[in-house]
Length: 248
Ligand code: ADE
Image (cartoon, rainbow, N blue to C red):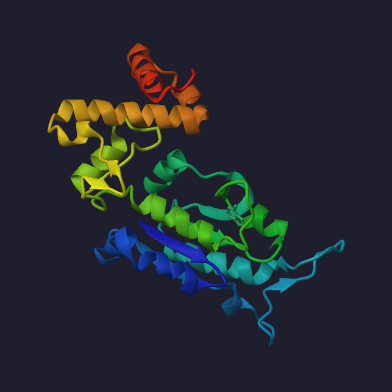
């Protein structure tokens, strides 16, 4: 999978490919990162990439020509059929299903805007999709692009170990993760839940699933609504609520 990122700060975005899971995927050639900087395509002496907004108001707007040229160059870096995605708070929300859709593509061009905005004509002419990380404003699309690259790369075949990828595909889908513990068994007066020390794998799996259901119910009821629990799941959730003393 080839990512081509259009950004005024390529050194910032490059860091996502230098560490951890994404770093290893890049080393092994499962994915690659390429960069185009609109500043390299600015034709005036000052290498101008932004200008004042028509109609007045604060801030600056990313100019059409240098960014358009950078997008065209970025498209040359990725296979046919790779969409151009603009990171913006005005986009549709990025979630795991979008990550899965992107992971099936041969590549992506990611446009990270800066300043107060991007000339709308650039979006109309060059962008296939607008994506937001969530309802808050970042200073630019770079950190959002890094999040997309990380979430998508994790889903590429061969990036995670078998056990980890099985977990991702498993029935835990659509729920928050269960809590995790490691040694020591007792710390700061708190003990590891006894079931995790039992060696009973079926019981451990059941407990983890119950915790995932319970936490999702308490913290993200919208996830539970979306799942439409069956009777078995409902019973497990009831057991969790009873044990934790929570009202239904
Ligand atoms: N750029 C600025 N804020 C953003 C957000 N919330 N998501 C994606 N790109 C952004």
